[in-house]
Amino acid sequence: MPSLSYWFFTTLLCFFSDTVFSGDPFVYFDWTVSYTTLSPLGVKQQVIGINKQFPGPILNVTTNWNVVVNVKNDLDEPLLLTWNGVQHRKDTWQDGVSGTNCPIPAGWNWTYEFQVKDQIGSFFYFPSLNFQRASGGYGGIIINNRAVIPVPFGLPDGDVTILLSDWYTKSHKDLRKDVENGVDLGIPDGILINGLGPYRYDDTLVPNGISYQIINVEPGKTYRIRVHNVGISTSLNFRIQNHNLLLVETEGSYTVQQNYTNMDIHVGQSYSFLVTMDQNASTDYYIVASPRFVNTSWAKATGVSVLHYSNSQGPASGPLPSLPDQDNPSFSINQARSIRWNVSAGAARPNPQGSFRYGDITVTDVYVILNRPPELINGKWRTTLNGISYLPPSTPLTLAQQYKILGVYKVDFPNRFMNRPSKVDVSLINGTYRGFMEIIFQNNDTTVQTYHLDGYAFFVVGMDYGVWTENSRSTYNKWDGVARCTTQVFPGAWTAILVSLDNAGIWNLRAENLNSWYLGQEVYLQVVNPENDSNENILPDNAIYCGLLSSLQRDQSHKFQFSIGSPLSNNSRMISFMLLFLALIVSLHGMCNFEY
Ligand SMILES: *[C@@H]1O[C@H](CO)[C@@H](O)[C@H](O)[C@H]1NC(C)=O
Ligand SMILES: *[C@@H]1O[C@H](CO)[C@@H](O)[C@H](O)[C@H]1NC(C)=O
Ligand SMILES: *[C@@H]1O[C@H](CO)[C@@H](O)[C@H](O)[C@H]1NC(C)=O
Ligand SMILES: *[C@@H]1O[C@H](CO)[C@@H](O)[C@H](O)[C@H]1NC(C)=O
Ligand SMILES: *[C@@H]1O[C@H](CO)[C@@H](O)[C@H](O)[C@H]1NC(C)=O
Ligand SMILES: *[C@@H]1O[C@H](CO)[C@@H](O)[C@H](O)[C@H]1NC(C)=O
Ligand SMILES: *[C@@H]1O[C@H](CO)[C@@H](O)[C@H](O)[C@H]1NC(C)=O
Ligand SMILES: *[C@@H]1O[C@H](CO)[C@@H](O)[C@H](O)[C@H]1NC(C)=O
Ligand SMILES: *[C@@H]1O[C@H](CO)[C@@H](O)[C@H](O)[C@H]1NC(C)=O
Ligand SMILES: *[C@@H]1O[C@H](CO)[C@@H](O)[C@H](O)[C@H]1NC(C)=O
Image 1 (cartoon, helix red, strand yellow):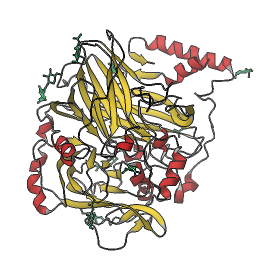
Image 2 (tube, rainbow, N blue to C red):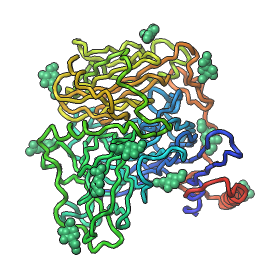
Image 3 (spheres, helix red, strand yellow):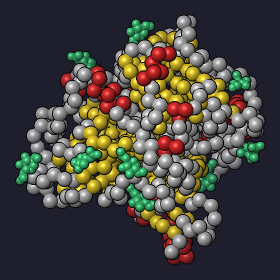
Image 4 (tube, helix red, strand yellow):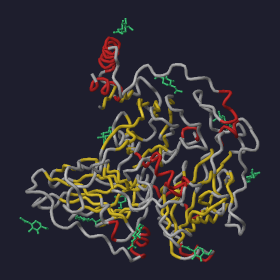
């Protein structure tokens, strides 16, 4: 029965036919988020799975589809899933971060419903609260082009998702305690590739008996490989032995197509490469993800999986392909600058990406945001942006705004670092609706940080070492800077982005490095459409209430009748469900697509 119930509940029902439904298609998912015991590095530990899968299922949809995900929280703590890179246009209520949603209490479920409006590309989802991403709960998101919009390269022979993560055998609960206590995360116990440990490329570094990822390919074929760094805090260098990575897309933008032998992928970033199987298959080939900008004692934490041609003559062997010079700070920044937008390619809309001439738009608001390493504020380890450490209020910002509750937050985030003592606060950025904002991230920490903005894609226009000044603007790329949602900021360096504030809502701007984020390195950007004071975002009927509004919350009375993890004890009910379901398949045959 487990496999049958699994099959039943994870089935994606796809009501496809415009002859039946005039609008954009809906896809439905039932996801149970729970712990599952796995040993990715040979040590048993609790991992967060979705329907017992780790990593979770890939959300594979097409531009403008409506996605409905009923999430059941089977963990022992509150949960929210966030959809990194999905813009939720005018729908801040689906963003799944502490400022937009009350957490789903343990044992409850909540249904996300959102449209992937005007977007294409490669993203991922993850649990946004309590350091949970350190235990998993993540999976890939693919948003395909609509059939009417050509993709700027030939149809690949396969589509492979690769999720990279620095990994600790400690639980997320122990890791977050360490972070609260100012204890460095230290060297990861390993780098996982799709939730699996390293191939035994070196008997002294990798113990026997670890399962590793094998990517099976056919000689001569070309695959689209989507690579995401879903880890906690480690920048990773990704490479495939003897194979070029032809970069084609990053976080929803088609790029100028260029070959790389390796790519630095920072926490929270996503890239698509085309990889052609053009080698002679005398052996298998290593797929490697190594920690970047660290010392040699990190070498034991190297992610290794295997690229296996169907005609391969033997296992991969010998040394791993080499990492770019760890001590050369300009390699990585130059590589980042080389990633550019293909201005002539169409994406979510048929008109070329470059028809949005961001370089010609007048900037209306400028924020220079300085991050600093952890410091003690009132006896607690905290991280800050412009001297402010964000502490999530118990009432989400969106609910406070909707119900006009004063005192939950202020909209007074400073546009520069203020020379005053750091403080813990709930201070938002006031974004001008339809304005054009310039944000400069200035990294005063000693490690690479990445920053992510929800609700938007932004243009990465400049990046350099040193302190940003007004003169730095003369180096901006005003023409083909890539639009994405997550950018790295090198230590002692700055990164400048431009963003068009056309999406009303309250949007999270955060460090993707979990340790920086967890200690307060985030801020929300409030964008209000003044012509529509009733907030364009409509509070969903199923909204959960908490904090100052918890009296509005009705108890969730249904309390799950069935669970994916533990199959139904009552088989007759199960069987009748299945029969109903089969009847549905038969009746919808021809206008419905099914995937298992
Ligand atoms: C995603 O779904 C499309 C159909 O909508 C299918 O053609 C494609 O193979 C799927 N991709 C993956 C990676 O499953
Ligand atoms: C919880 O799941 C049930 C069905 O499994 C659904 O009817 C209900 O709407 C869900 N609750 C929320 C708040 O989404
Ligand atoms: C990328 O490398 C492949 C060989 O792996 C080559 O065939 C192709 O022409 C290169 N493309 C570009 C744009 O350099
Ligand atoms: C296959 O390619 C490798 C590396 O490019 C080369 O060293 C080897 O001699 C080749 N083997 C054959 C059988 O062509
Ligand atoms: C290497 O890095 C680790 C973790 O960042 C640190 O604890 C260790 O002291 C470093 N070792 C050397 C030799 O610098
Ligand atoms: C840009 O996209 C166009 C499709 O519009 C494609 O033909 C072209 O090869 C791409 N250019 C580069 C440099 O990747
Ligand atoms: C935000 O800025 C707008 C002008 O862009 C102004 O009208 C509004 O009062 C500001 N809101 C707050 C809370 O400061
Ligand atoms: C951080 O700022 C201080 C001055 O406030 C400066 O001396 C130091 O070099 C900066 N560190 C980095 C990594 O930017
Ligand atoms: C204001 O927003 C609501 C909710 O999206 C919408 O129904 C209404 O038409 C909007 N009003 C105006 C004047 O745009
Ligand atoms: C299973 O459920 C059916 C209908 O709900 C009920 O009639 C039957 O007694 C149940 N069987 C068991 C073994 O609980």
